[in-house]
Structures are given as structure tokens and as C-alpha cells.
Length: 607
Image 1 (tube, helix red, strand yellow):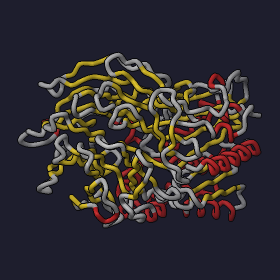
Image 2 (cartoon, helix red, strand yellow):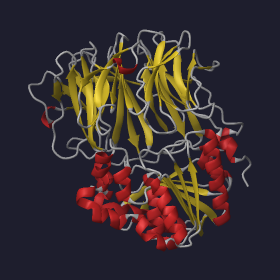
Image 3 (tube, helix red, strand yellow):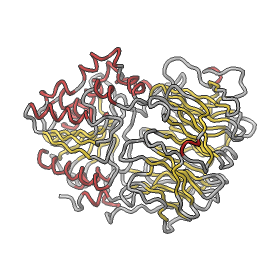
Image 4 (cartoon, one colour):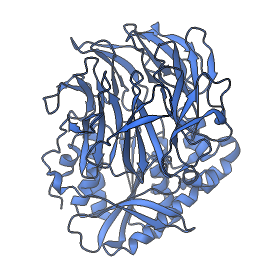
């Protein structure tokens, strides 16, 4: 039995997503002390924080005005992902709804440099596409001006330094994007990244002089690198990209840039671990820079970088296997890092948390599949193990903190988190190895990982359970139907049971992006039917637990309903738990406690 119950582990807090106020002395951040993320502010390291929002729903981001003591934050309702934007006056605490279109999504695009306007993308005109809007900071509701009518998945990366243009991103697929600039006076859209095939252009930022763009791309490369686009070029294309820094065989994750000083932080994802490069661009050569010492941060994963107004410091979130998420502030020139937040661990000693080991499993075709294996302290033999499969599939399990994982480790379970083919973080080729007709090769990777675990001296091969959410839920169901003899139990959280009904019912704004990964209803319906676990339920031998949110806009709750109905008709042991105030995953503390308490009971009974 665990020394602490699941309530304690789920009450371990996290602090993240920091933003400096215009005075440079106050920091806003998100913390889930109340059970869902809310906006808090802090005036210095280790000081008592002030809670600024008091909602039952999660706040998804917060961004300070560059000029006034106010910030914009985003919040949806019941997990429906139709986020509205709100302005919080940090002086008197008043909150105004800036968007007031509850049936539409609103995606933050940043403040103008004078703090007078905000920009965002929204599908309020047509649910399937995103238009671009600019709105005065004190306007509300229908007072936004549509500055560009879109016909796809558009988002914004900020105003130019002189506030005359917006930087626009268009996503065609998870691994295929384009960048544009939008002239706010003329409405002219300039295409910066024409290309053939799938190419990523992400994490775009204006150069300090506004005459160029920095972006992370894999144009003509298997991995992502940092590049510069000169806006004074006569024409644009792959041949005009200037390489600034490559990842030495790994992905450059992204760049945070202060567009006044030219100071920056970019990160590399090295086998799941973060490595920062901190520097300052040369005024005369946008591809040249000097570097400063690498920050001394705890944990293995860091991000969400935000500079203070003078670019002398930056805030970032850091976490690790044994380190819950907190905000640190780093001195740019020295690399000295100081923790500002103190998200508590619910009284559980940090030294009791267990660290993972990076391992590699050779799959059926010789592919090396990385994963993180964590064994409980003083592990003996014949341990049960949970194989926790990430979603996406264009995602990656990294060595970050998980209260759920530490709870099961304390209960005597081993924990294995594979990054099978199709995962991000290991190059474009690796990520494409599960596309469409190769989908089931990733499921076979899971089976190979189980065979590897079965040979591990600490693992009991008869007590292996699989658990996953979203696309990871599909992987659970597919693993149970394709390799039924490997599993003692399966847990499907907001997973896909039927690719056809999933694509038919997912949010209109997501369908084309998901079809680019899974296959299209028009051309690949027969194949999608053939790989859908709903049509092989009779193969399942292990007990199944299905959990979902009623308001899920990504994987509609009907996916859970149909797999449970089919399993029950065949007399299979199946349990169902639906939350009527959740969406794609469980954000509310009371729901997470109920969900994982029942998961723990389910695993204790069957594993």
C-alpha cells in the first residue's frame, strides 16, 4: 500500500507559464492551488503570492500588457475548448470579457507594443476556419475588427516592433506549416515560406528591427533548426532561409526573443531533456550572436520563457521526474537561476519521488524505440508494471513530474513510458513511421516493448497493464485487440475507438489536420475501418476501464459509449466513468481524484 493516498499526490501543485509585468518587478503565473489553474502574481522570490482569478474553470494562459498594470487571460467552460479572452485590471481586480462569443474559440495573438490593442484568431464566423482580429484593449464583444478572413487553421505570433504588421502562421498538418506577414493598413498577406511537401515552420518571432523573422524549421532537414527569413528579400523560398543554429542531430524546440534588445533563449530537445542556449543577436548580422552561460536549473525539462522589460532576466518553468513544476527567474548574463514560486508537494517529501531511466528497445524491424522506465525505490522482483502511452501521436513523453506516476510507484508498480514510432522529438522520419497505412507498426512497437519488459528481472510478465489518453487511448484499445495475451488490464482515457466516427464527429476546425495524420474519410475509409478497435472487440481478453469527458470536442464521448456497449454485449469485464463537466482530459481536482482512485482500485483488482 502507498504511504499516501491518491488525494495527496494529486494535491501536489504546479506553477508555470510566467509573464513579467510592465514594471519588471511583478510576475504573473498559473498555479492549481484551488484545484484548477488560476492566475497568481508574485513580487519577488519566495514571497507570498496573490491569487488574481477565482473561477471553477481552468485558466489556460495569462499575458501582461507591456504598458499598463493589466493582463489578458483565457478560459473555456467545462473543457469545451471554446476559450474566451478576459482582461484583468491588476489595480482593482476587475475582470471584463473581451470576446463574449461563447460558441467560438479564441486563440491569443499578443499585445501591441503600446498596449492599446490585442490580436487573436477566432472561428466565430465559421466553425471550420479561423479569421484574424484586432481589438482595442478596452473594447468588448463585437467591437473587434476582422483584419483577415481566413480559410484554414490560422494563428498569430505577434505584432511587428512598430505594430504595423502581424506575424501569421497557417497549419496544414501537424508537421506542415506556413508563415506570412499581414499588413494591417493594406490587408496584404505576404507568404514567407513557400515549400513543397510537409515542412514545419514553428515558434516564429519578429527580429528586433522588424525586417526579419526567426523561425524553427525542418526545411531540407530531418530535425528542426533555427533559421532567419530576411523580409527585404526579393522573393521567398527554401533557398532564402539563413541557418542560425542547428540542433546537432536533435530538434531545436523553439525560441523566445526580446524584440528590442535582441536577447534570446532557444532550447534543444536532447532525448527528451532540455538544453538552453542563451544569447544576444548581433546588430549588424541577424545570424550571428554571442552566448551567455547556460542556466543552472533543476529537473530535466524547461520551457515557457518570458523576458522582463529590460531583457536582463527571463522567467521559465522547469520540472523533472522528481521535481514538480515551478517558475525560476534566470539572470541572462550569468545564468544564475532563482526559484520564485514554491508549489507545494502536499507534505510528501521530495526525496521519496523516484527518477526514471532512459532505455531503448529494439523493435521488430530493428528500430530503436526510446522510453522512460521508472522502478519504485528498493524494487525487488515480480513487480506489476503500467505501460503509459502518450497521445498525439505527434507528442513525446519526457522526464517531467507526474503525481499520478509517483503514486503508482509508491504503491509498488513499475512505470514504463515509451516513445514509439510516430512520436515527436526524434526527427521527421521517425515521426512519419506511423502515418496512415503504417499505423499499426506503432502498435507493434508497444508489443515489442512488452516483450522487453517481460524479460526484465524486476517485472512480472503476467501483471502488465496499459494506460493511455486520447490517441494513447486508441493505442490501448489497439494493443488489447491486436495482442490480447500480453495484458492483465487496459485503461482507455478519452480514446479513439473508431477512426471513422471520430473523424465524422470531431470539431470542424480539427478534421483536416487529423485527416492529414490518420487518413481521410473520402480516400481511406476502408483502411480506417480496418484498424479501428471497435471492429475487433471480441479479441479483448483483459478487463477494460473506459473514462471520458462529456464535453470533449476533440474525441467525442461517443467513442467511449460505443466501445463500452460492444464490450458489454460480448460479456467482457468493462467499467465506464463519464464526467459531465470535463472535456478532453480531466482538469478539475475532484474529478481527477475520483478518476485515479477508481483506476487504482481497478488495477489492484485485476493486476
